[in-house]
Length: 87
Ligand SMILES: [Zn+2]
Image 1 (cartoon, rainbow, N blue to C red):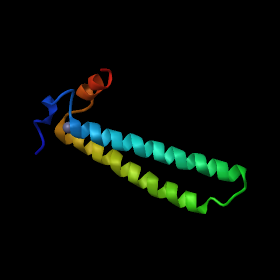
Image 2 (cartoon, rainbow, N blue to C red; image 1 turned 90 degrees about the vertical axis):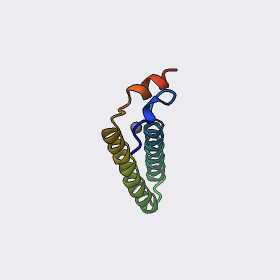
Image 3 (spheres, rainbow, N blue to C red; image 1 turned 120 degrees about the vertical axis):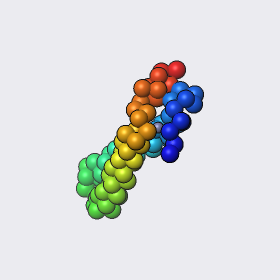
């Protein structure tokens, strides 16, 4: 499959992309949660936001699964990635 990617400049690009995507979704969920908190403080309805956070949570879970599945199959678990992050 995509084995052989690991030598490319500072680790597995696929793992890095999947990780970036996951991190972005974590931030996305956090920002919706912050909006819910603000709405609650202003006693505004949160139904729409609750639905939004639900969908975002599911997408986030899928991204996490995709990342974990990739590193398990590919065997590229973050060692090269971590060293590329400290550059
Ligand atoms: Zn990989």
